[in-house]
Image (cartoon, rainbow over all chains, first blue to last red; front, side):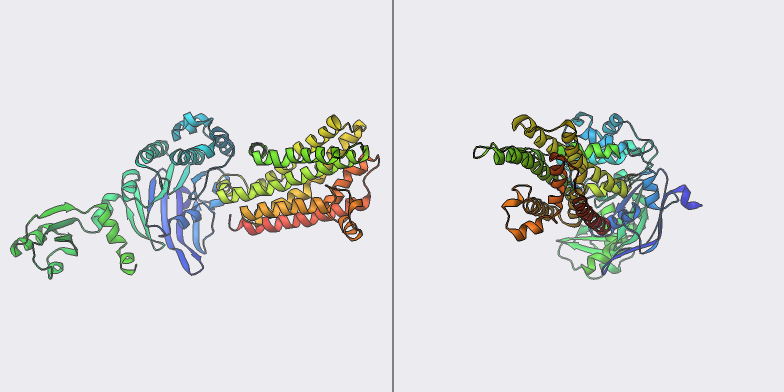
Length: 300
Length: 239
């Protein structure tokens, strides 16, 4: 059975809240040992996808399985650890007490010291959880997620509201855990984070998966390069009709053409004499993301 | 389960509000009420000791519900749902927490009675009063849990306080029923708090609790238990 070999499997999963179809027919398989980013804007359906994955919500349609069984069963068996969004520190316990308690629920946990070490908070063990900074709190939550040494760890927006330094430290810890062969699924709305820290990016928009692949594949899938030049007073009509051009964007006096054949586009521009400040760069992941979710931009 | 109990008891005892409001307050009120105006009435010192121990136990038991409401708001209950702990273990653990955290108040007031106010009882009476007050506090823990699961953190605090003060005063834990007008007195004997304190009062008088009183308290146990189950089921869908 394919489901048992994979860590996560969504088959046509859908979830509706009132009028809002938060998850709209998701098919997704994550193999064991993969690190996968769920990338999307706020409200794209990432958190609902994660709550289906963890069994906190049941899908209205379709199925979700973890390691071949229902999410609740996998959670009960100690195969899952999670860092949830919108949780506040548990008052009146120390970091060690909290992590030791959670570790003790799992059949084969890490030692508390190991968990604290991995999360980079060994020096905070005796501190009270409700008296830490935002970055420290976030790492305590990470330690709570990994304390049981679960095969799958799920992180919902783990770096929201962290400063650059704390974020850097956090990703270092996360990769340390992933290197042990564990499956990691995290959601984010930061493209750079998805690109830098995941093997694979799943782009979610309007409750659907609109793209799935490595950062490189996503960039290629939306048409290779970005050609930009100074308009220097010239008109912009007809630019969209030039060979290779997929889309046109004007920013001040500069035209930005996304093209899937930059050579042809540049030659055509040269014939028009529109080459002042000409620049050809590979499309960034940012561009890819905008293109993939552009439908939203138009309706918003 | 024991780990969960230990964790939650620790969290409760580290709550300054709980220690002052749930343990120190009943002791102070007991000493105040029994020593104002001469204070040579040995019978009142004993009755009030049981009443205030009961009052402290009711407050501590209800406080368990406040803890649940807090845990709901901060997402701790949700976090527990993604650990191997079952929801049933969480509820049972919380109920047991309530039954442990009532002990300091009971012990403290009884100690104040024996050591400060010179209440003299047989050893078996002390033990029986403590055990009966401990067991009898379960309905109030369930009432608190029901409030905690059903209401938000703020309203739980208010609801628990209203339940605590209202039931304690009407139930005669603060002042003896003899001071009440007749209609209130006949109402008071049906309150869970009055029947709860009577468990201890009858032992202090040297006889077993009346069956009728135990029946009334059992009825309240069932009512509050159903309320807690109902509230928990409702909140389980959203926590």
